[in-house]
Length: 367
Image (cartoon, rainbow, N blue to C red; front, side, top):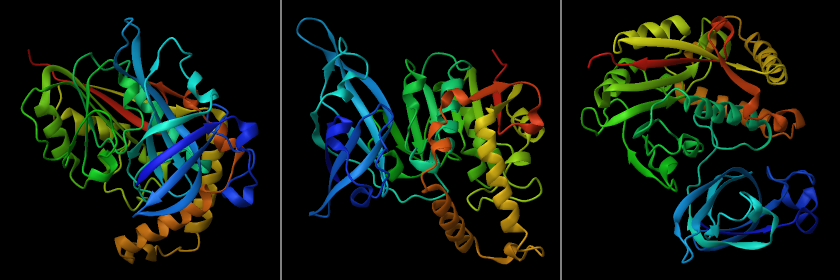
């Protein structure tokens, strides 16, 4: 996909909802609307309304006067796909996000990943997807306080929406999907995290956010991460708490193979690391209000199958049904969901049975 975009002030870019497929008042995170010129397979399919869901500024050398130059990278999500655009360098003397308030051309055109929305990956902060997106971003933001400086391996990184929060560490993204890795401005490797293509002790730290549950044999992931980690390194694993995600006695998400509570995660990590500390990720009252409503919807849906005949449904069919329900529920505009932000989440050491996610901070103890 070749993309170009124009950033305009809200008064200029406001258009009827019928034309854009979005509410008239929808804006990106910083008060401007983004219009994407979308061309696919050589045919121009017209303009697409999109929402900026992540902004970061990356070093790009210096100007002749010695002023640092940066490239502003904007990840945007439209109703059809998750895209990534790169803007021309600007001086860091500008306000950090000041470029969003001026009309300008994003360029040169950038080839970016176009991925179908499913329940397997977090791809967008649009609409009802925002709470989950912010929860994932919060995991990255909070992880930085527990990981040492140096080279970091971002395992199962997906589209890499938040690796910039780990700066100034040098990060390497690993994912089994080349499509998900496309467009990430860092070193990236297509690989199965159970067979990492790195030597022993190459990384000071390893981070796994919402990926351990996606393999049937997480023991292999732990063994590989322990192998590529420096002797004094730290690994951090963030995974959904099975006690609060869906049903404690049943895996509802068809993209998950194994789910853990805090004690199970600690036991698994203890087999490969000398020191393990487990924390819980918790949400604010307004986030938990949304979660409570989603659980009530799930309970009503599962009550229609009291014999659990869903266990006999093939996995591919389960995934299709899961995606259909997810997209139907979360593509609807929801002001409460759109208001959720990174600050709605925190890590605690107590009350882990009620945590949204369980987080294991693991250290190797040998000298």
